[in-house]
Amino acid sequence: MSDAFAQALARQAQQLQDACTACGRCFEICPMPAPAGIGASDPGAVTAGVLDILRGGPGTAQAQRWTEVCSGSGTCIPHCPEAVNPRLLLSLAGLTLKKRASAEESRLKGGQAFAAMTRGVRVLPRLQLEPEMLARLSAKPEPGAAPDFVFYTGCQVLKTPHIVLLCLDILDALEVRYQVMGGPGD
Image 1: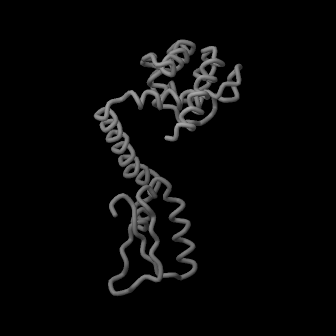
Image 2: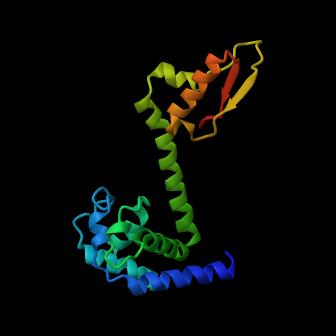
Image 3: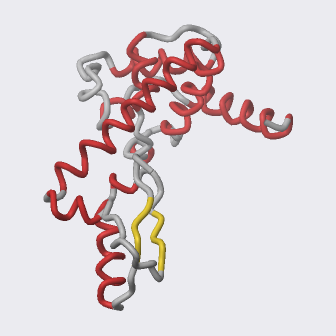
């Protein structure tokens, strides 16, 4: 990160800290605290905890959890009476926490996040698609017939299979011989 960018980010963080009154309105409107198990927490205390993290303190467990689960929806932004961008506030607090983590903690969290993503890639398509449609996304070419087109889907395509299925429908309508490659196993 360049020095100029880091300084601009530090100034922005300071402006947010100065403007935020920790009223907790952003926490109250946020869709994430309840599913994260912190919905019953005091909104003002959680918001004050986020500010504490930005100021170099430990914050509260609830504030740390809120920074972890922020979906970045921006639902909070128009509800702040101080015109603070709470989404940015949480993002900066999350970055602060990540910078404090040891290399081993970062490695473990990264591994956990990757495992959760791969579970999603395996489970979501099975919930969304019938087995025949799912098989279409990993169809192997006919022996001896070279495809006209290789359709490479990438590794996370199964999270949004409807996009690929639409593309395959178009290729079928054009009567193009194709081979699908990609997905989590390729």
